[in-house]
Image (cartoon, rainbow, N blue to C red; front, side, top):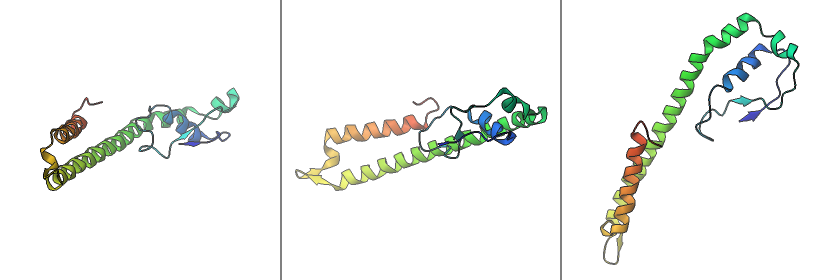
Length: 133
């Protein structure tokens, strides 16, 4: 996340400031690296309102649905990638424990390993459900 100072009399910057405040962060590092946050900006009332015309305000409101959909698509894509990576890790682990031998038998036969694989599988299925968390 970048930190920047608000440029003087820039409707585009005001639009970005408004839109960036609409979405609460879901991920700390995976989503929205291009967002800019304006902290501790000192501006007079004239600078904040005087340069923003009615047309500028309407253009901001027209862009809100498009902005929200693009952010949602980004988050859904990242979530799908995470579930796919987890499923790949589970598949790899299942194959590995069948091949790996310890104390004369396959590691997959140990109950503790079976519990770990079951936990991995349940967490992955939980990632597929609509109300996981």
